[in-house]
Amino acid sequence: MAYDDGGRRYPDGYGPPDATPPATAQPGDYHGDPAGYGADYADPFSPARESEPPTVDQSYGFDRQSEPNPDLGERLGHVYDEVGERAETNDRLFVHVVLEVVLLLAAGGAMFWAYRADGSLFRGESLQQILLAFGATLLVATASALTLRVRAVNLGLFAFAWAGLALFTKLHKSFGTPVAAAIAIGVAIGAGLVLALLILLLKAPGWAAGLAVGFGLYAAVTLVKVPAAVPDFGLDLGGRAIIVVGVALALSLVGGVVGALPGTRRILGACRDHVPGAKRTRGAVTLTLFGTVGAATLAGAAGVLLALSLPAGASTGGGTRLTVLGYAGLGLAAALLGGTSALGRRGGFVGTILATGLLFGVYLLTVAHEWRTDLSVVIGGGLIVGLVVSWLVELLGRPDPVPADYQTDTTHKDLYVPTYR
Image (cartoon, rainbow, N blue to C red; front, side, top):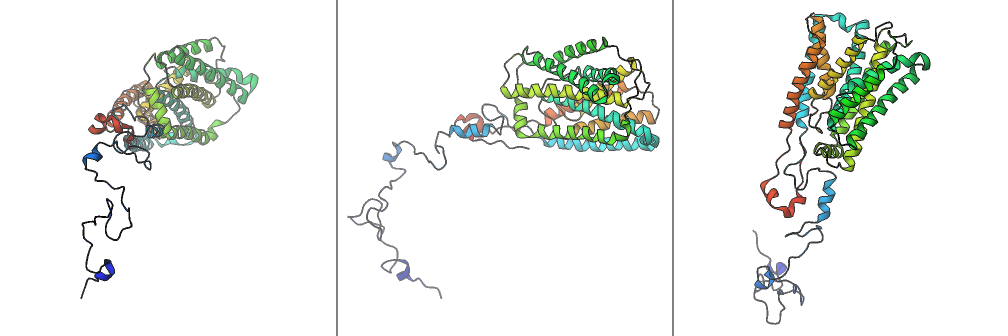
């Protein structure tokens, strides 16, 4: 049987004390409390309380009623790049994951279909040539994706690759493989620096400056007397094709992962939001400089790789130049098809790799089935589909809208924390 032991719960043993305080008690005192206990208590709804200014809770670092701590918004600014007046938060990455799964299935299907049609393409020397061509194209595709990310697309990458091939072929006999490769890539880096200066100092659009520097570099290289035939470099690169492809894959993968980091995306957002002709932020200047020069370096290295992959005695005339132009076109198509937005910033993780594999699979299909299709058809189709993919990435990767109360209540706008998708 339950009972109430009042003697243990209340001082007098007969229940709670009288709610009416004695005459000698201070405001807020009750029976059994020490004198003055709760003397600082006041009714929050009393008229006298309404006239007092709001209190500040120092434990939270901001006024609970009105003023947020300005330092909080600044601390969030280095993580979330669209906090403030912008009515949107960070863009989504999930759309790139879905796209890359689709590209993986499509590339695997195209390769398997080509293998079933003609298995000899994937054996012996033919496989080595395919791997080397894939590695060179992936380098150019990574370079194109890099320039797209910083919104300074270089449409003259074909000239950088051709300069690497021509200069390496010209200088190999006199300086040897390592020195000739270093000089060829160094010239491409120098041209990349000139391009970056045109973009940053003269505020020229990337596509226009890239074409100008590209054609200028192409014209300068034509003045160099390149051997009519590819010499014997004395380096069997075919046996190291797997290593070459592995390096190209690693570079593309590292670029995709670094581009997905919050800090990098914040700076890329500054590049994307840059108004042509206006002053760039310090981060945008740094990233544009390194992105432009890095893309030129990759294109020059791709040209050296193409030279090493050519058989001894092959012509260095117009056919080789068209081949280099074709690889550059495939690279740009692969960058767009892989999910790199034509408007800058947005891009996936391994989309460039998978898109390059898909385009190679389609081209191998045309070879295996002996379809009368030129490489330019594959390039054109890839560019068109890539622009559609870029549009879808922009459409489906839009940031989450900020709630209506956040747009109207500017008092607490710095306390709104976006969510990555």
